[in-house]
Amino acid sequence: MQTVLVIEDEQDLAELIAFHLEKEGFHPVVVADGLAGLNEARNNPPQLILLDLMLPGMMGTEVLRILKGAEKTAAVPVVVLTAKGEEIDRVVGFELGADDYVVKPFSVRELMLRVRAVLRRNGEAPKPSQMALGPLTIDTEQHLVTVDGEEVQLTSTEYKLLMNLAERPGRVQSREHLLQTVWGYNYIGDTRTVDTHLTRLRSKLGAAGDMIKTVRGFGYKMEQ
Image (tube, rainbow, N blue to C red; front, side, top):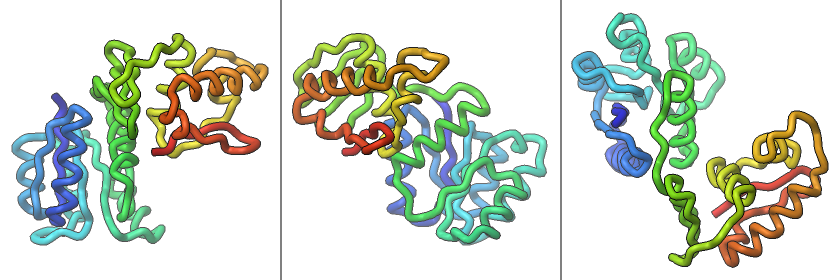
């Protein structure tokens, strides 16, 4: 199990992040101030660090500078969490070695996707055995889809379409992108193929099918 060190002094936010990390298959370690976070990272290097910039004890920028300057922790990816959204703050974070930057307030779901994206760039991230979106549950190991506890029989293509949308909630997927990722086309095919399969998928999902939204003139997205 991969360890994610959360250095965040807002207790409610830290607990929320830890809860979702556990759901995603990670082992969260939470520390509330900069110096303690630095010591934890030095003594027990995690697979990834979520680092707030505004911290008691030692500022997050200083923690980041020291971590990236030390041989033992230089390779540990760091995602910076901060209320500072100005361009200069992002630039400073990246110059100090941050791998990604998330501005508060943020969607926890988006944060989990960022964590996985950073870990994929640095090695394989664990895949959750189940995904839950509203009444929809997907067991990724058994390829089992249920809506309100009732199993839904999907074809392989319908399952791939559903996973493509469910893994990127809120993100619009173009018809061309879906053709390439689901059907494996290396060219722009007939996008009506996507529309036909999405219509059948929505129908099979019943009420949960309403979470799949059409973005007129572009494609589809999944929303809770």
